[in-house]
Image (cartoon, rainbow, N blue to C red; front, side, top):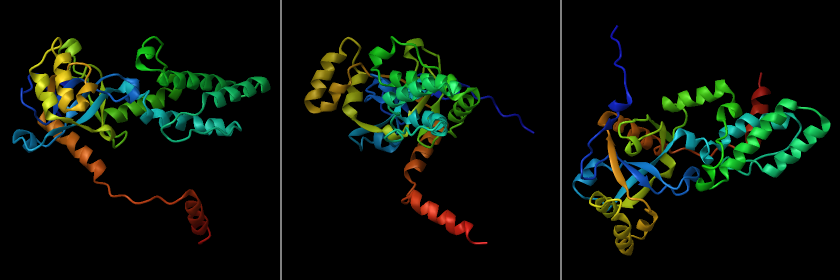
Amino acid sequence: MPIANKIEPKDFYENLPSSTNETGDIWLSLPSWGIAGLNKCAGVVITPACDLSQKKTEAVLILPIISIVDYFFSKSFFFDIWNEYGSKIKNAGFEINPSTRFDNPSVSDLNLMLQEIVREKKHATLCEQVKEYINYINYTELEYGERIKHQLPNIEVLLGKKKYDDIIKKMITNSYKSDVHFFPAYYNAGDYSAVPKHSLALFRYAYSVPVEIFDAAQTSSDSLWQDDRILLTKSYPIAREFNSWPLKASRLKDDFLSDLISRYLSMFMRLGSRDFTSHTVGTFITEIKGVE
């Protein structure tokens, strides 16, 4: 039986990307639009190659890339944490719920619960866990500049080692969620590495950038960018969001690029239909159980 070749991060990325715009280009210092409290992030180009090579498009489609560690403190991960604590809180006799799956529960509600737990001297384990949960929530509400002043909450403590390891493994193998895609860290160029930390591309945060902004970035520099950005803003107001000089650091190689685009398209190709309400589901369960 043949032995599979070992795949390493260097197999994913090209060290010398083209000076022209290409599908799979990985850019650094792009606007993050507030994702996970970041002030900037990387991004990968997924515009079709033919549109770029034949200049048939005036915009480039970008998928933001953020580190897995940052993802743990984004709105996309709030529900994973809540899944770990929601049933425990309910079983302890408390009615606390987030407003939506992209919100955390109220810290004030959790603190009131803690006071009652302490007063009644019960649920000691839950008490310590909820304290960690409150620490997590408070951290996610900080702006990026404030976050770096605080100690990072320990996700393994929040979720437990087994679940934490399982989630990371699923992220790495692209079996965690259909809307994220794994990018392994590649430490080839220090601070200018295309992916300096193990990261995820975020499908639901795709956005377009005028081609001219990236064309200008290719001929600019860190010292010239602010002047170039001001000139670009006159024609492309979105340029004002590019506070840092965008730098093309690498390109995703074709076989891994095709996998990324295939997964991106498959997520949006789902036609889907409206879900049954919980009441209807309950009715169906009753009807099914009643049929012997």
